[in-house]
Amino acid sequence: MTVAYITGASRGLGKALAELLLQEDDIRVVGLSRQQTIEHHNYRHIVLDLSDIEVVERFRFPVEEYDKYILINNAGVIEPIGHVGHDFSTNILANFNVNLVSPSLLMNMFMRQFSTRSKEMQIINVSSGAGKYPIDGWSSYNASKAGIDMFSLVLNEELKKDNVEHIKVFSIAPGVVDTDMQGVIRSSDETKFSNIDKFKDLYNDGQLSCPESVAKLFKKVIDKPNDFPDVILDVRNF
Ligand SMILES: NC(=O)c1ccc[n+]([C@@H]2O[C@H](COP(=O)([O-])OP(=O)(O)OC[C@H]3O[C@@H](n4cnc5c(N)ncnc54)[C@H](OP(=O)(O)O)[C@@H]3O)[C@@H](O)[C@H]2O)c1
Image (cartoon, rainbow, N blue to C red; front, side):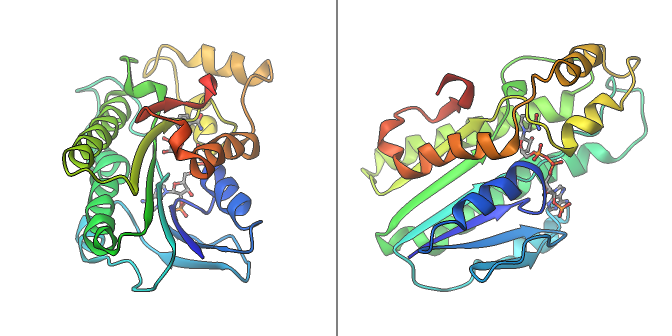
């Protein structure tokens, strides 16, 4: 029996991943986010606000025995959108907390609780192409995704140094996916983000991937992690 903990399983890519995994009888899915939208006999929801660091620090994974443990850090926020110094918003903290700090805390706790059990483990962080190059207006988002890539690389380095082969870590960019997050991007304005027309064009030209097909690409890594020797991946190259 496998357990998959998925943050942000209530919408978008996380929901598609959860529903894909739930098609298999031997996988239990535990969703972690503020809202529950999935009802399934093999699904359990834990309400968790990843912007609330004190709560996330106290979080412990349920103590249960499985043959394989998967953590998918999928939840993410794009906001704040806007040039640095142009806004008094406190959303920078929320962005880093949801996209980088909480996933790092969860990875740390996941390793602490399960790594000594000698069971197969996978950590899959949902990253972004935006973590690899600068986009004006997206400083927090780009930096948080670059951070999750590097955290994953360091963890992988540590696993190699300790000769640990039963634990795999990946940081995977999903491409441009038709979710609420893309709606938030399109509804921002060009004074805050000069690339907005590119994202509107991608949408109008039907270039966005659907979450269900992207979930299937992530599942390739879950099913055959040894086929993917790199930590940093982009599903557009699969
Ligand atoms: N869509 C794209 O084109 C795209 C491109 C590159 C990377 N990504 C990455 O893909 C991942 C999924 O994004 P998406 O497009 O599916 O986004 P989405 O449709 O906006 O869904 C975001 C998910 O994150 C959860 N979330 C947001 N704030 C949270 C909080 N404070 N605490 C707990 N959960 C929270 C939401 O759950 P609740 O509302 O229930 O809390 C929701 O399930 C993100 O990491 C994103 O950066 C997306």
